[in-house]
Length: 117
Image (cartoon, rainbow, N blue to C red; front, side, top):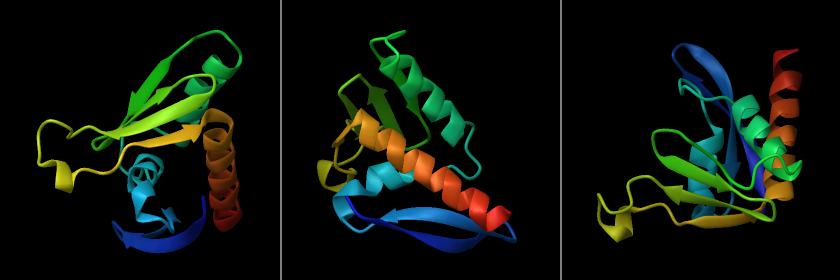
């Protein structure tokens, strides 16, 4: 799974985004580019750690478009508009190893910190 970081202008600020080179991962990008959302990357990491540590079998988190079901082995990211809009307009469902999901978030946070610092 390949991705690149890009700066975007939003609300008069330059913000770093993560963009996946394969369009089938658009839902993952939507979940992680959280500017203006009520959740943070740290919120997602907390949920992942609860599952990986065995404190929870399943954690769920989402934003206005993407929803993640986090389990020990894999995380499934789906489109919250499923059942509401035509299937051809939905973001594809993604299944990613939970450890890989965590690594992507940790890397993205480190890149954000580098750009801010």
